[in-house]
Amino acid sequence: MKTQPDFSLEEALIARGARLVAGVDEVGRGPLAGPVTAAAVILDPAAIPEGINDSKKLSAKRREALLAALHDSAHVCVAHASVEEIDEINILQASHLAMCRAIDGLPVRPDHVLVDGNRLPRALTLPATAVVKGDAKSLSIAAASILAKIARDAIMVDLAQQYPGYGWESNAGYPTKVHQAGLQNLGVTPHHRRSFTPVRNILCRGEN
Image 1 (spheres, rainbow, N blue to C red):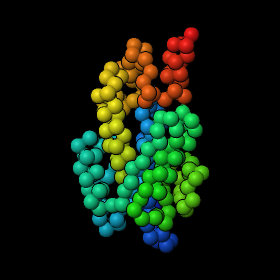
Image 2 (cartoon, helix red, strand yellow):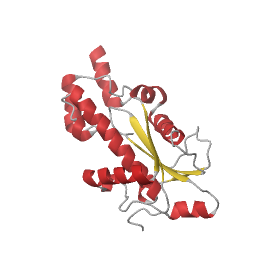
Image 3 (cartoon, one colour):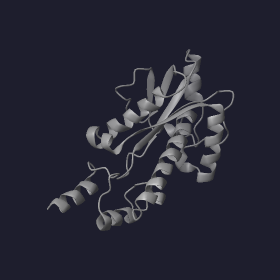
Image 4 (cartoon, rainbow, N blue to C red):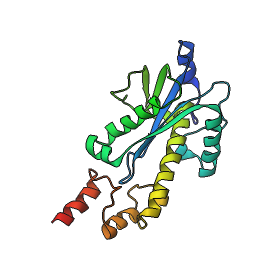
């Protein structure tokens, strides 16, 4: 079993005629608050930064170093779907919306897209392949996971300064004990996902 992602999926597509292969990943399906964020990355096969891995396996310092290297060497785009969109269309569809926005925002159009997960966004019109646990298999998807995580974490740190008491600067909106205690004691903010059960339960309790 591979312990680190490599470029073999991309190389196979390039060998079949795809000139530009993009990897896409999203971050933030599980949190109770904040947007869902996706990134799309087209790596230059001749200039792939060393040390790319699933963002969860890298230190914050290493992610930041790779962020700079990716901006220098690759085509990248980060995009979001808002809390309102998550509540309106559900988290899966919002994740796919963010992915499509990231792909559409690339400065060049890829010939093929490698999408992390087991489903392709319905709105994606480009040739694409779903890759389960893609951030552990594909360097392009792993690179996208790094960009998406850094961007979303920064948003949650900023929101934590505006809404202290929920621990967003460290939990990024995930339902930790600190966050759940904040919900109980401070209530629901405009940045909470009202369609998610723990948030909805508190809103319903308030109405009763």
